[in-house]
Length: 429
Image (cartoon, rainbow, N blue to C red; front, side, top):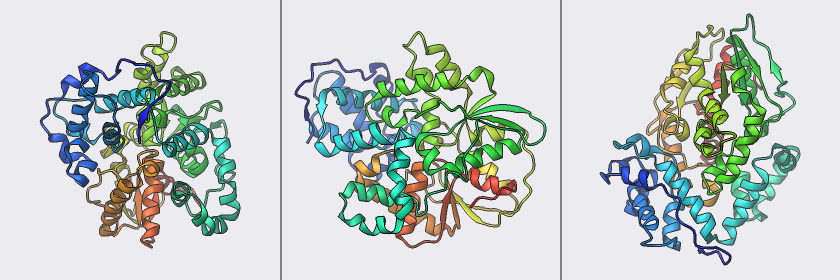
């Protein structure tokens, strides 16, 4: 139960009234909202949630248990933004509302533990993640067999991990990856926190594909978490702290682009200009950084690409990660790149833009709805007959792979750039 914080002082809502006013309550968002499609409840639609936020902003209601529950059930997939004819920036409303909730209410013990442990203490720090995953890497089978004695939330987290954790030493990146042949571009790579540990192969493949296309790739060693999990869960001040750290680590003026291969991270760093707009010291550099930020697929379709040299004879379905399709408007670019891979058959995936239920920590905090959405996604994957499912976000990769394992499917889930790396002649174990 959400209860008022005992030490909370009354605070004025930070939900932007000007954005609230842009909603004309037409209801077109409802047909795009995963939770509304599942529940058919107006208060679990974007329009209904905006109505609740507007009532709080006007002081008509407070952050009651019921109001908080409806906002917590939102995935922040931003599909409503794609559907909205009025251009409502729903994500900014929700992020402000969750900041308000964090200040005004004390969450249930379970939720406080999950946020403190995973969001604040573990996920943003690769070194801590390596220690956490070490027993799984060394004794994976035994750990998984013994998982039944763990709390349910830890069981869910363990079930999301890949069956085999990648050997980081095999895919360790140097500070600079030189271009193959003449250098045409100089780019920097955001490796991410979870990405640098669980998806080191994806980062390596990203650097190699860029190198094959004439890019010198700089990997700033002092970079850190982008702050996406915090921005989406009521801890925007921590996002600002992480943003400043990355702005110190990257020099956007010295590169043609800052490359990101994780949809959630990309959406967040592209908003650094907004996140730090009120900080006079960092506002200009944050805006410059956001302009240079590019998803790997977005960057590759903008340059003259070198031809791929190896066939990849696989039937592949592409799943639209929410913060790539809805957050960044990137849909055709990954499909175009995959369609250029020799021998590859790109097939349709039903409801590709519907969220898979991952959504940061959502699949741990809201397991029932996450499982309903995952079931729907896996059904679509199995209908497609795909051998590979390509998607551009770590959370989606883990969530869909978990669902396929549970259905005993042999289909694999990979980042599109891993397929491209193979087509450029790279060997991925």
